[in-house]
Picture 1: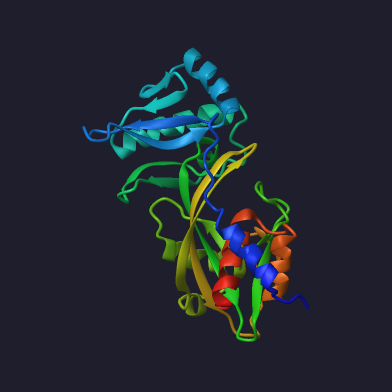
Picture 2: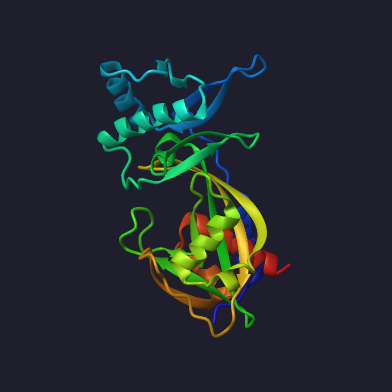
Length: 279
């Protein structure tokens, strides 16, 4: 059985100190025009330079109203959420046609600004391509006898197939709260009934930012929940997104994190859980 050494804990601590990386200077910023004199523009995302060259050619050939190409930046006119969502969806469809948005989901995320307002909704798969900040939940499922449940992602997943994940994790859809999303994902991914899922405990938030070639830039707020499961309960997947589950000691979970067996997000969330349990 793997044990939690001081060196292992230090390595996990170091991981958590590097969750939000800077945007590479060669990435092209996406600006949204605002109706305020104090801050006329807001950076909402970033494009990989390879995406920029394609988009520049596509928009010059067939412009989209409200979308402007400028020197080393993309400017989007401010508008009501409905109109802005429409313009952004046209932009995403243009990128999808060029092959820059794989795994189209037909599901919308909301872009939330610093004041908590939803400025627009957009196809979920487009968020990494445009470097837009999204939101997700991750649930650490643990047992009274000191184990943590991990899911293995289906080989059919478009992102990180076959990698280890938390008991449940998923993107927060537009018009959905983190709490509602966590309970939904617990049932869909792990078969956890509502009576048990209601016991989830909010346990923090991690901001993940990193280049994610060839998908773009991954910028996401991870809402973390903990849930104690009875020793006898075995999770079961309902939506086909999880190949199976394993229950391991905290030491083995840490060893698998350091062996790079996890998705990047789940590695951070699990590392955070292990460190909180060892304070």
